[in-house]
Image 1 (cartoon, rainbow, N blue to C red):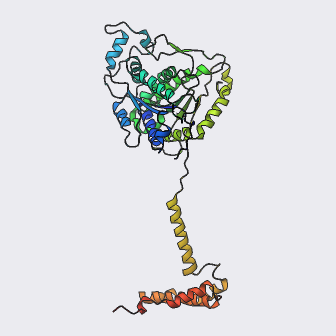
Image 2 (image 1 turned 90 degrees about the vertical axis):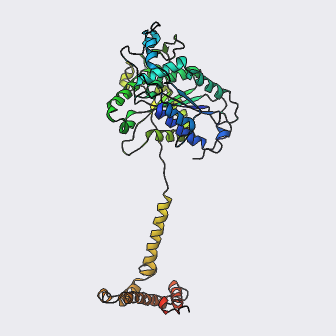
Image 3 (image 1 turned 60 degrees about the horizontal axis):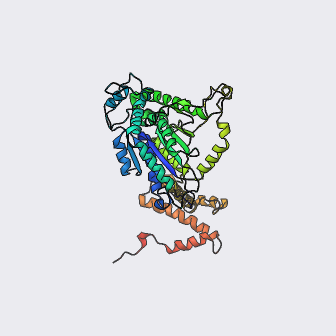
Length: 446
């Protein structure tokens, strides 16, 4: 779809894909946007794409930008370490003392997988560990800070003056990398951005979207989704106005700054929950999510949505249902969903229908002579004397049958021509008939 952008209209935007599903969604958006003929002029430096994953093979495809996915600007692998050795070290099982900041959220009975560079195996805590370590000793924090700094320092004339940074984060809550990293990433990103006016929006794909591929682990993915959404809802209550709403909650997300043991605002301003439609088939929910958000973000829809969001901020900070609001036991309203519809004009089908309809009309009018607008009722009554008897026709040879049908048609045409006005259509048709001779009566070439 063509995007018309004027100078001063582009808001600095960071697209982040967490895990395989999130990375593919961001890659699909990148491909659509990079296909725009003026991408370098309008968006380069203002729109950035970042993929974070525990699976190096998925990141490699996004770095190349091949197939249905476009090239992302930056990738971060967060599983290139020995999880067992690292967790033992932080638990105090090796030469160092136990790390209380680490053990606050890691179960003492859980034993991490030995694989390095592989995915999270649909286990949330595996992803949370990989993210935690990447923040502590990896380059995730530095890379994120560098990206944000470059977007802010960009002096491009297309930039919207005074517009705060907006961050769109894509992930699934089915139990892989995204479901374990989406909450600590949100708070890490808020720390890096350091702007309360910046907009953080999450796009969460629910477990049912993967029901066709999870196989025997269906119950596990649904349990992961439930746990992830419960944790999200717990933190989303930070910005509600219910009397018993907390002002801060314990959450350890940055091992570099161990004094940060609590958070005071919700992780995302708004989270879109995306599920598989109930009434029709959709092969790839992640691809549909990417297409829908592409239309939403790079069109006036987003501006209208943000205006509505700001207008209804006070109302959205209540807990629902209302009966539970005063006790602080309801649910927050910082959620939404989205979709898009496309009306496709079937040009080929319409042309074929029109051609068939025209052919049928032509046969009815000019061969069967059965159009009341051209042949009157009295004329059709006179046609009866030229009718071909089917029993008689069956006794004739094939050539004689064709001549008999042709003769009847010519007789009807002559009747119409004789009764037509001087320049009428049947008179003209009779004139053309007089100039035509069957091929059998034409002289053969020597």
